[in-house]
Amino acid sequence: MAGDPIGELVALFARLPGIGERTATRLAFFVLESPPELASGLGEALSKLHDRVKRCRTCGNFGADELCNICRDPRRDASIVCVVARVPDLVAIERSGAFRGRYHVLHGLLAPLDGIHPENLPIAELRERVEREGVRELVVATPLTVEGEATALYLADVFGDSGVEVTRIASGMPH
Image 1 (cartoon, rainbow, N blue to C red):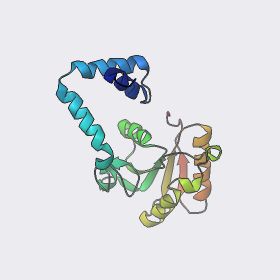
Image 2: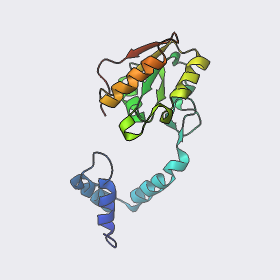
Image 3: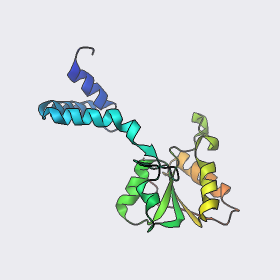
Image 4: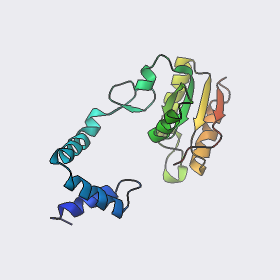
């Protein structure tokens, strides 16, 4: 595909989750037919993304500062923490408007067969946070998959004797 800028763009778009070749082609031609400022803006935003976006030092959410907007919000209930696998799960819960606590993003799930063990996830940081912030309830919102269930069971075991209530959302999160 070298030398074919449209083909290269289609191939890059097609690497994004949920984007097939037809959608990638449609996106490539949309960008091509748009004013050049759109392509420049997209390119600049993408090239600076990793430099401009940070992980929140408290919860692991993405944001522009060391603390995300949720952790900085004094109206949020710091005694209830919702544990999610990934940031899109957090976004889905936030869209519902039903949860007013804080979050902890694991950026993955336990999957021993894939080499992902408790030490590979920020579970120790969660334990420290629970002690430091006086968290009284953890709401585990991992997907209803083998890995999500294993992670939920592990968290229930880790916090079982700590006095922290560990609850599970009823329907899981789509993955």
